[in-house]
Amino acid sequence: MSLRNQLNTVLPDILPASPKEAIKGTELIRLVRMRLDGNYSDASLRYHFSIMSCDPGSAIAKVEKGQGYYRRTAAVPALAGAQELLSMTQGRLDDLGSNQEAVDLAMLRVKKFRAIVHRWCEINGRQPFVFREPFKATSPMGNLWKFPEVMLVDWEGAGEEDSPNAVLRLKQTLSLPPFHLCAGRLRIQANIHTFREDFFQALSASVWANSGELFYAIRIDDEALNEAFRKLNATFGLGVTSFGLSLEQLDDLPRPAHILNAHPRETEALMERLDINRVAAAHTRPHLDWAALDAIRNDSEEVDKLFNWLSESLESGITKSFE
Image 1 (spheres, rainbow, N blue to C red):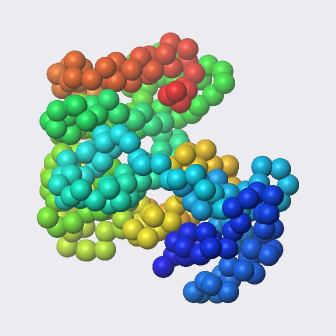
Image 2: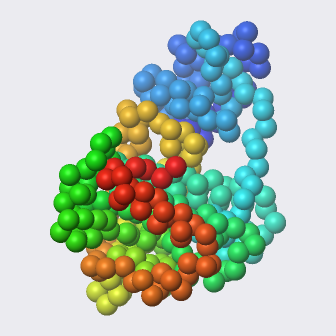
């Protein structure tokens, strides 16, 4: 069992319910260590206390002023919204049955991975635009084949600036494409039974972009599966990348909101947990497929939002993250 899971188990029995009786970190480390399996350093325990105290779903909370920790009594909110789960489980909700805990866990894994991909893209100079409206509960299942979960915008040298960017202006002057759009499809885990569906669904959703990529949270250890992806990539050009996590490591990540709002040092620590493996590199196309794009524009207003955002950056000469 991971350290985070162990702490979630033992902390409710140790922490006081009242903030007035909060336990300081040194004493909490002493009490917790007696009940843990494994030899963990003080620094590791303090780090987990700090991270978990920012997570509204964990058992530990930190006093607002001063020092010390107490037991969070608020119930863990059930995850609402089904679009992420519908999308990333290929719509096979029947596999989860009526088990609300299983649904909540699946939703949480999806949102954690989406947050990790979001931060990873930002760090690597690719601005993410997340599609949500096409995957809402009332949307047709066919949208899974039309829209990616996230569009990654690479300005290719014209990084985010506070003043007009010379590279962006030069590209416009030379009539060069100012950006590259990569349609990203997110999946938790690859397996031999569904990898072709994952691949061709991602390929279909990327036909209007410059390239497409299939991202998996869990590392792909099966070399036969990796080779199958490479053969498909050689023919169809869709990229495949694994973030190298295990399910336990994914569950051990902080809540999505904390990942998205983490401080630079925390973000660096999160990125160090990843073991990025480019199974197959995406093939790029020099131009967008405007005919394919026009065919789906009326299926989601978010397509116009994406291009309005891009147009604003081009008009101002300043690349900005989507808000």
